[in-house]
Image 1 (cartoon, rainbow, N blue to C red):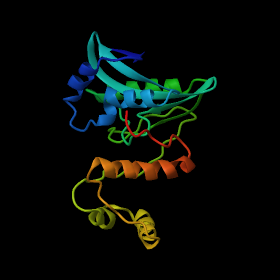
Image 2 (cartoon, rainbow, N blue to C red):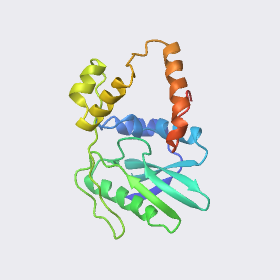
Image 3 (cartoon, one colour):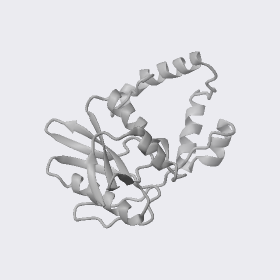
Length: 203
């Protein structure tokens, strides 16, 4: 088994491999890294791969964000799921260990991996910490009221109620004109949020 860093990977190979993983998501595909690297010039993508000869046995996509001579390192940035995808739990661990080796470099300021479905917590070297968080998968069925009352946690439900009291209304987006209006509002407000906002309207 050879674990290595690949800057380019064949999309068809990844998609064939993912067919065996029903819990894999869009964030595991090359398309997600392409969107990020095409949209933000400071982001460079790559793949930690495990191969047995030419056969792909597992992979873990990552992105590096340059900050002068330094970098931050993220597994599946801006996505909920960052697990390595592998045929064997031991291969998963090797991929995670390689990610942590990269994160231990002197030029790496910060690193994070969001492990959603990994079987067990990885053994962490000194200087690394593990934080458990709750994450929700949003159902796209039903009304916003169903989402607000049944699926949101107490704190977020309070924020929704406060927004409604202040005059915010919920409207479905039913056509391209509605989407453009939503994006106009989002772009006008999001620059104040910092980070990578605003996201582009189209790619």
